Image (tube, rainbow, N blue to C red):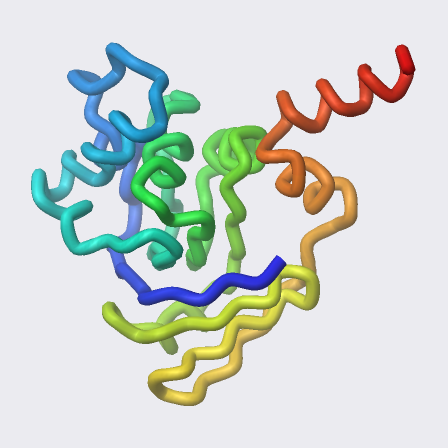
Length: 167
């Protein structure tokens, strides 16, 4: 899994209500949720995002409630990856279940600035900052998690496994 895009940096302790405020939870449509991604921080935040761009977060990203809408909103905004210092436990699991790649890099997140161009190889855990030349590594994605992401999330993964068992 390879990705290339512009970094959009957000701070630490961003909760799921900032990612997608409760008033937008009347749908599970990724496009509609994506149009309001990060509206809890700034209503126009998502307007600067282009498909393929990459969110970069500080500590404890995704804290708060366990709403699955938060990773769906990020994906719906066109961002397939979040690089972060650290992630809230429930958000971490929900993200992979919904098909959103998270890469936890600790303090190395400080080597990425808002607007930097990034190139990611998720299979090796390598992040190359094309703007400043920094190379960041994290453990590569386990095969089981990569398989879930390859199917767009847990539902697609289970659906395929069940069809193979029945076929």
